[in-house]
Structure formats: structure tokens, C-alpha cells
Image (cartoon, rainbow, N blue to C red; front, side, top):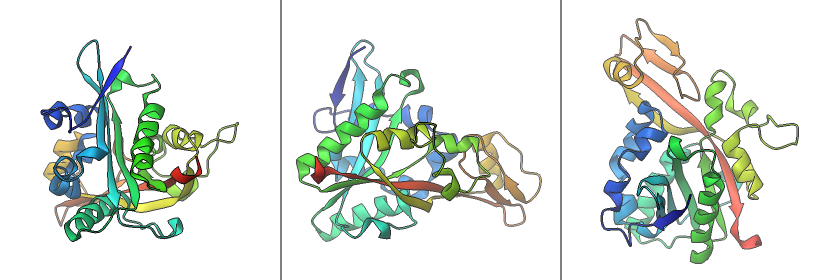
Length: 251
């Protein structure tokens, strides 16, 4: 199976080609982050050179897409914020509006269609993303990684989860393993990477569950439980991710 790399710069209908991939790759509730709703189009209007996808040569389907952003941020990696994904998106747009020179690349997502998983595309996508940063002259690629297998352990604190190892000493989580195998350092958890809120009716529509009373609910695909307040008619899901850092200037 062979793939062609496409970008917003060489594919006029690039954004529409991505339709459906996120829906296939992520749980429905993950598609309702307000920061993504507000800023998603900026990926293609402000930062097209940081986006790419792989198209299946045989079928013409988009198999995987990768999104990253340029940031002016260049502080110590131990000072990376709790905000994670939402912070990075907001900061990138703010930096661009202020005309601040980018100094760090930040990954936003790598989404692989379920039909193309387990074919080595995850490593290939991370390597291609790193190549963009190196070409831009950045010293590092930071990434608030979503450790997808954490959804199997939603009641375990993220800080404990990221210490779990395989017998070979690599992270237990498959996505974290991809990054570590490529030389990334796991820095720390970011506990408020995404903040997704909705009414009880919205959450019932997103998840197919019923929420008869207030409390914590485990969601299929959720990394942590969601908190539902029936009286306030609001459910809140605050997702943790994991800050990893690729040193692009050490290769």
C-alpha cells in the first residue's frame, strides 16, 4: 500500500478532503471542544505549511492527517502549561495576530483512520511532522499527546499512568511509545488539555448514554470521567494529555 503526501498548499480542496476523518478517529464528544470550534479554520488560513495528510494512492481516501502550529514560546519545557491542546491553539493564533516570530513547533493532532491503523503510519506521521520543524529551523517540537489507551484506565490518575512501562521499559501507552521510540522525552502531564462542556441533552446525544442524576460518568473513549450536574444542566469533561518534547537540534 502506497500513499501520497498532500498539503493545503498543493490541494485546493484540502480542508473538505479532511471531512469525516476526525469523526472516524475520535469519540464524538471530542469534536465539541470550543477552542477547536473557534480556531480550526486557522490551521489552513494562517498555518497551511504545518498541515499535511496521506492519501491512499489506490483508493484516493485520506488515510491520516497531521496538524501542528508555530509558537513564539521558547521557555523551559518544565514550564509547559496545564492548558495543553487548548493553550497551544489559542497561543498560536495570538502570536500570529501580534506578528511574533515563531520559535517552537507544537503538534496538535495526528489522526489515523481506523481502516489504516497498525500499518506503521503513526511513526511515519510523527517523523514527517518533525521534518517540518527542522526545515523551519526550530530546535524542538512539543506535543500534548493524547494517550489513547488511558481510556482503558479512566479512574487512574494521569500522573501514575504515564509511569507505567512495558517489560522492555517503554511506556505502556502505544502513542507515548511512538514518541519515545523516536527520541522524545516525556516531560509531564497537562491536566487541562481540553475543556469540553455541554448540556445534559448534548452529552446524551454525543455519547448515547443517559445521565439520570448528578455525578461522575465513565465515557467510551474518555481518558477520565465526565462530571454531570443535573441541576445546572451541564456536563464537564476536562481531558489530561501528556507533554512530550522532541529535540530537533540534536540530530
